[in-house]
Length: 121
Image (cartoon, rainbow, N blue to C red; front, side, top):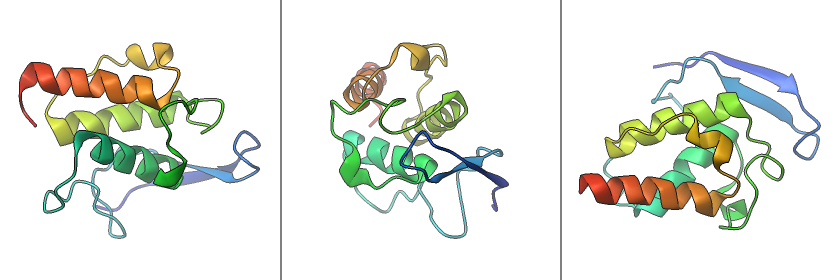
């Protein structure tokens, strides 16, 4: 499914353009982040989703990296990340939690805990 993407200039993350996927599409012709043939850990799958949405290489996702300040992930991108994680892990994440998440490690812990509660992954 093709995605409708808007690119806007951004100074928040190293002067790059910020691209926002407005359709919250889970599949793209270029990259299929929901490809279940790739056996990944929960952490690896989450980093893959964040990388796909933010267009930032996964190697920059250390646990202590600040989501908003260092990665430039805003609330719209956060909602897309949450929607993709919900689909990938068959869980429900309260969108209001994103405001309280400061680091990549915080988000990993929340999703891992929700997966453990569901015993789905």
